Image (cartoon, rainbow, N blue to C red; front, side, top):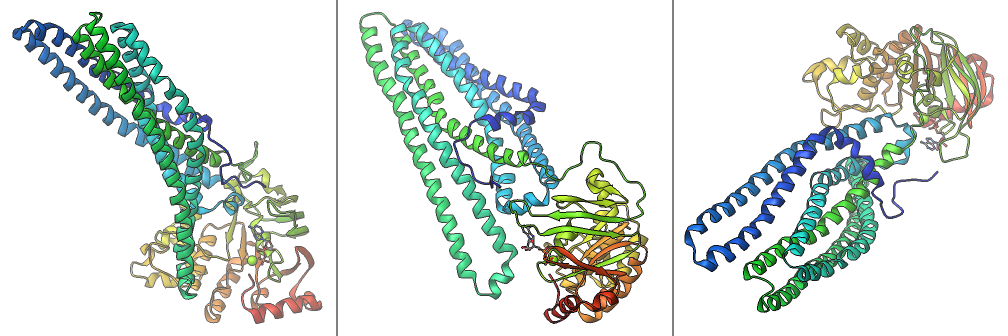
Length: 588
Ligand SMILES: Nc1ncnc2c1ncn2[C@@H]1O[C@H](COP(=O)(O)OP(=O)(O)O)[C@@H](O)[C@H]1O
Ligand SMILES: [Mg+2]
C-alpha cells in the first residue's frame, strides 16, 4: 500500500480550493475585508491625483488659498486609508482565526474516526505538523494572501488604466516592462512548490523525532543513547535547514527580479516622460502624478513575490491536510447499521482470517470459536501467535479480512460502532492513561457512570489505592499528572473496562504488569466480574487460566485446540506453551 505521507509532485491549487468551504460561513467578513481593502487602494491611488492638481493648479499659479482645501483632501485620504486598514485587520483577525479553528476541529474529528490501521501507518509528527504549522499557513493565505492577491490585481489594473489615461505612450512603456513578471512568476511558482512540499514534510519528520525522543526519554537515557538521538535530530534539522535555505534562495532570486522591474520601469518612464514634457505633450503635474502612480505600482509587483510563495505554501499545506481528509475511513458505520439494545453477549468467530493492511502474511487463519453468554474463554499461545490481533477484532479496531465476527448472531460490521463499543469493552496490554483525573480516566467509556458505579469498578479492579492519592479520585494522572506504576495503571484500565458494564469483555493480558500479590487480588476480583460477562481473556499464567471455562490454544494464527484446561493438559504443545510462559514472564 502506498504511504501517502510524502508529496511527490508540485502542488496545484485544487486542495486549497476545496478548503474554501471553511471560509464560506465568513462570507460577510470576507466581503467587508475586500471592500475596505479596495477603498484603501482607492484612497492611496487618489493621492497622486491630488498631487497632480496641486502642482498644475495652486503651485503653478501661486494660489495659496486653493492649496488649503487640497491639503485637507490629501490629509483626509491619508487618514481614511489608515482607518480602512485597521478595520480590515480587525475583521480579518477574528474571522480567519475561526476558520483555522474550524479546519483544526474537523481534522481532529477526522483523525478520531480514522481506523487504527491509518494511525499504524502515519508518523505522529506528520499528523502534528499538519494540525499546527500547515493550518497556520492556510490561515495566513486566506487572511492575507488571497485578499492581497485580489487587491493588488485591482490596484495594478486601476493604476495601469490611470497611466494610459494620462499619457498613452508612457502607459505602453510601463505595460511592456511589467509583462515579464507574469512569466517569472510562473517559473518561480513551479520550482517553489516542489521545495516547499519538501520543507513541510521535513518539518513533520523533525516533529516525529522530537515526539519520539520525548516519549521514549527513559529508554534513551537508560541506554545512554542521548548522543545517538542528538545525532538523529541534528541530521534531520540539517536536512530541514538545507531545504529551507533553498526556499529562501529561490525567493530571494525572484524578489530580486521583482524589485528590478519597477526600477527599470521608472527609469524608462522618466526618460520618456521628460521628453514628452519638453515637447509639451505632458504637463509637469501629470509627470509628477505619473511617477507617484508608478511608485504605487511597485507594491502589487513586489507583493507578488510573497503572495505567490504564500499561495504555494498554502497549496502544499492544503494538499497535506487533504491527505488526512481523504484517507479512506476503513472502519466505519455501514449504511443501515443497527443499534443493539440489550446484548446477551454471545460472541462468535466464524472462519475468521486476518492479515494486516499492506501485508499478505495471514496473522489469523480460519478461526472458529463461539463464546456463549457469560462464558470465559482464555486464549493461550506463544508470543507472536496472534493473540493481541484476535483481541483487537471484536471491537473492530481492525476489520476481519475473511469470515466474520458476530455479537448475538449479528455481524459486528452491521452494528453501529458506538453501539458495538458500548457492548464490548477492551483492556489492552499497554494500559494508557490520559492527562485527566482518575475519575475521568475511569469513566472514559461511560461518561454517565454514577459514583457507585465508579466505586464498584475500582473495587473489582482492586484499585483502592486511588483513594490514597493526594486528591483521591480527582488526582490528575497521565503524562501531565502523577506517575503511577505499571500495575496501578493496569488496574485503572481494568476499572475503565468494567465500569461500562459491557456484555463482552476482551482482556489482552491484563495482569502482565502486576506483582504476584496484587495479581492474586485482581484475579479474585476478576473472577467476580467474569461471572456474568462473556469474556475473551488473553492469559499466560496457569492460575489465570483457571478463571476460564474453556481454553483456546492459538498456534501461528490457527486455533490448534479448544477445551477445558484439564482436557488440554493432555496435549503436549499446550503444556509447553504454559511452561514457556511461566518461565518467560508475561506473554506479549
Ligand atoms: N500493527 C501491526 N501491523 C503489522 N503487523 C502486526 C501489527 N501488529 C502485530 N503484527 C504482527 O502480527 C503477528 C501477531 O502479533 P500479535 O497479535 O501481537 O501476537 P501476540 O499478541 O500473540 O504476541 C506478529 O507477527 C506481529 O508482528
Ligand atoms: Mg500480545
